[in-house]
Image (tube, rainbow, N blue to C red; front, side, top):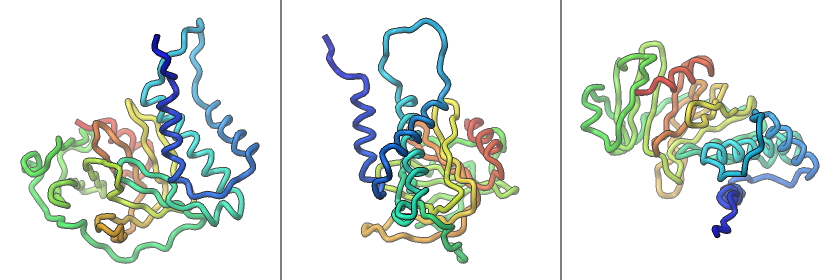
Length: 249
């Protein structure tokens, strides 16, 4: 008989998440209430009760995301929490650094390490992963490759930018955020983070972890699919961003 607890993996993921939460200890009752309220927002299936099954990775991530958002919300509600919230979330190569006030805007712009323009049609032969293009937008007007082929950027005339790269444990991008808080969005087969406000964007590449500021970024959607991380910037609204993300081919 297999005695493996179906929720062992979930427990491991939540435990691993702990070091990323640099927060004080809010009242346990507040945390419990917030987490319960967040989880109760998830739709429940009606019908005959069935034997519990092992949760899918998507379901586990939904629970993890709900717990993180609840802890962040409770912590940020106290003066001590607002002073301590920082470097809260990491998602497949993107680090979200949350603070209690809007961060100082970046007034300058800089290129990614090794960034250079390329013809969009040449991208398949220049990178080590399959490059996808959103059908909602059509072919990009221009493209660029950076960091020795590890990252591809596509640009459209209306200001939309799509970055795609191989996500990993160590972050490539960092985003300094204040209120309004990022929110997670359910998309087909994955969960995305929607960052609703303009924010400083940087790139972490040096071995000492030095932050390289890039520019002030527009509202952005961040998600992962098939070991690749995507950040879609400049779509304007969350609804349009999700629609564009769902049309990747």
